[in-house]
Image (cartoon, rainbow, N blue to C red; front, side, top):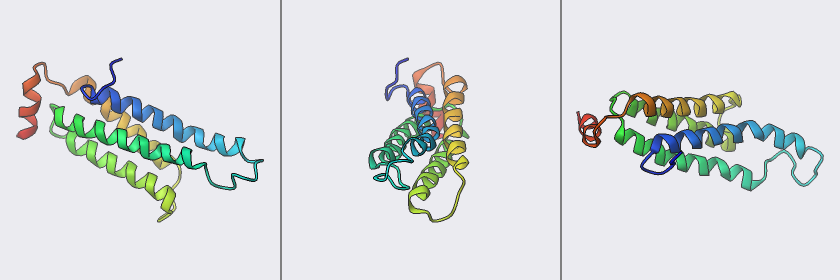
Length: 136
């Protein structure tokens, strides 16, 4: 699979799947480190920083996918889902409101689904038509 900036949906799908795996592995990390007194109740900084790495990669993928999609409704869906995912992940750190962990799974999964759908159904046959269709 060619995962590059020229294939933003592949990049977004890969980043989203890795993000989901990261989210699913977090509780396992806490269980594995439960006996360690040095970790306390917080995940290691390198583990938490992965959230922001995935957000940055997904930002690039959403930006490029929203530029190249042939469906006008995909652009706002990409951006809304990315903003929701960003809010949920930042809220985990800032604890503004109490949200269940499932919301981060849903937000990441929805972004993956959008990228898969866009990759499958929302691309033009010619390179120039995508740019024209997004200007309408």
